[in-house]
Image (cartoon, rainbow, N blue to C red; front, side, top):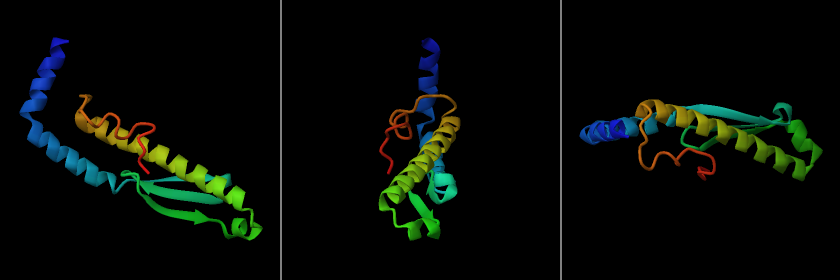
Length: 117
């Protein structure tokens, strides 16, 4: 327990550096791109580490079928997979930056159900 107090004191002393590092990491998350797919690749979605959708691709053959319900399900599945991968990448990036220290406000930022999109 007392080791954590020492870590907290270090955290407080280095707050400016940590804030700058977090800002750089958040900016870098915009450069992370992950893809989610569904239907064997007929639908793919790309998102970045900031949980922003970059693109969606739908195989034209799927559009020709005219099955709107199937299309909606596949788009939802692809986007959700991409967001899950983006959350994992973001959590790993932020976690390595923090060196294992809990940073208030960041723990729920990229976890499941964070509502990133």
